[in-house]
Image (cartoon, rainbow, N blue to C red; front, side, top):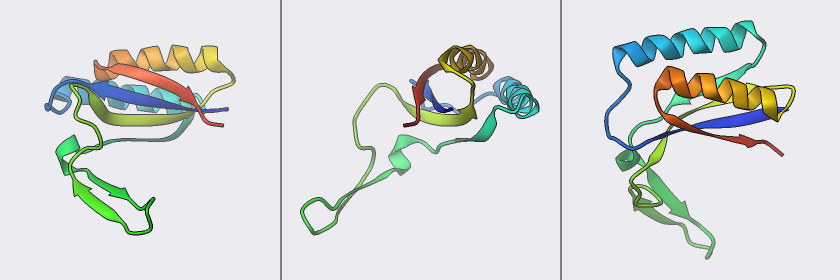
Length: 107
């Protein structure tokens, strides 16, 4: 089963060199363990563009969808046998990146 581990951050700062190094070690461990699917960091929320085409005419707005103290800073998509394994890996990822994470299964 695949899971999304979302990295939640509350500051505009990027990962420090030490955090990058720890994330690289964690990513290597995911790959070696057969859990790796895909991962990446995201640019700051100010770079976002929201598109709403529900009314038949696309409305394009600069900036994040929500004004919030926390935002999605990056993510991992992992393969795990069950939620317990995904939660264990997410805890390791949270420690590596020094951020809160959220775990959600794909349907």
